[in-house]
Length: 342
Image 1 (cartoon, rainbow, N blue to C red):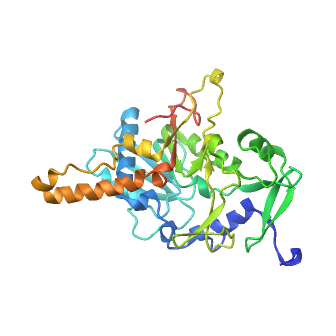
Image 2: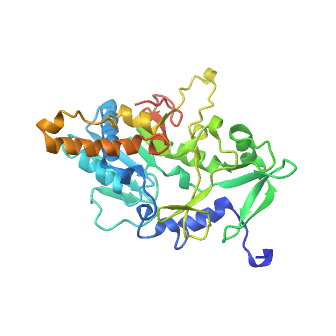
Image 3: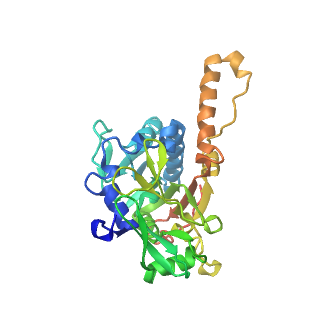
């Protein structure tokens, strides 16, 4: 392949086209579930935990009518599960699915389908594996240490392009400095901006992002850009044939570098294992005595424990990170940097 026969682009532009352009990977009828399994697909316990979190938010807001915004909603699986889990809770849930694909047939009519985050809602904004698919550019330090954008062709071939300057360079210097030739990073600034805008859409409540990610101490030295297709990890090729994704610098999204003297409470970051534990999801086995007194109940409890163990497993889904921000009503405190917690 020569420069004359190849269309070189930065990874951000190429990923946007591959995932969301005409015939893009995420616009296909099968949806994400046709290619990989998220926590939502792993067990209904995940939706039940989100339902409990939604109930906590409603209680904090002093209302039985609460909004739930699912950003990156796939085909509405999480909202379907939460609506089922809250059926007898006394809550009235206004559900919004934010997704760029078309509304799937048969989805609960209570779910409002939209391609943009609604503004002014009061409740819980939940983004499960959304930020990793917000396209970003990739940078690499060349042999002299100059940090350059990585350009890519439709077949996945790469070359180094222009030096990184401006806001992208500032972001790298603050959050992911590249000090050795060959070191790579995904420039997370678009994800920071997308998350800040999503949090700012809330009038009151909480915003939670769940993703596979890293913080300053655990940055991958050569980045984490990869692809997925039909349940398998594959090379990232921006031709629409596979998912193109990378881990999220969630400490940057939550601005966890806030100085103490700022007076602003920082967002909080938990592992999924910790977050789900706080919401009552445990992988502990049921007592063996239950097998004698209620054999069917024991089998059900054992199955639930197995599903919970998958959701909280170290080295697996349990290592996902939950970024939590509390948004107080207007005049009651900061927005995107509002205090987290459950």
